[in-house]
Image (cartoon, rainbow, N blue to C red; front, side, top):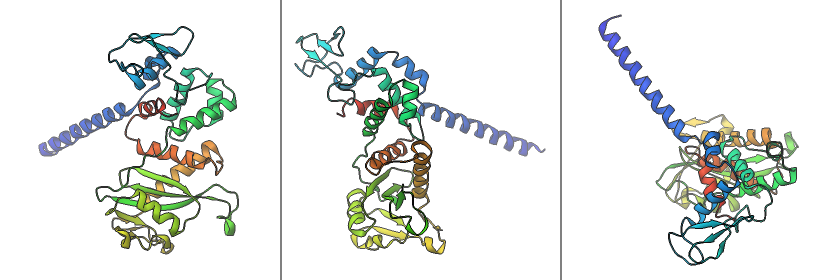
Length: 312
């Protein structure tokens, strides 16, 4: 091996090593491990203090004084303000209110949802927490409320947004496969956020208002040739299509592979973890996986905890 080749090989090896270390460090920073969770929240009192800190910090909502000290009330999930001596109950108006379940169990259930890629079933919560199935189901339902979609338009900087619709659930196949299925419309930014909404039909009267309300004007929309999207150019969008009926899936930068991948993950997770989802609650499950997609590049548990102390 010549000296130039050796130097080039050494340089490439060093670059690869530095890149690998950077990627590993970035991935490690994105994690929120069970060890961290156990250290921060060892018991119910630590969880209660975390809710108090997230909601009020050191400002009393009763008297408005900043820098107060909180004194715990023995035998109750509350505190006394050092300035006005009034009682504060931080769990009021949150998903934890009026719940007899251990607060640590609630936090651990939220943690499980935050680290799972494919969802957490109520039966799994029942087994891991030692609660009844009814309690586990309600906890899972309440945690999914924390994952409701935000109303921020996609494609705000003229980015590419892929849109598509899919069918979920049902048992019939072949000729009648759409008869008893739920329809979900979705939009995904390239390397960005996603949005998915359960709809009654896949017609233009339903889909076009959804697009106009959730995709910013001027965005570049890529879709298949579904007829409901034909008037998008007249509505202020740049619109490019691919013809799936002719086995065309990519034409230059035009494709819908990102949204198709999102549907694939959603359906695999529902089939593998939940097996079947009622149309009545389908939107909450769709929100769950949309939330995970949108926060895939950061630890999810702190985000859920912040929402948990404000959502009633």
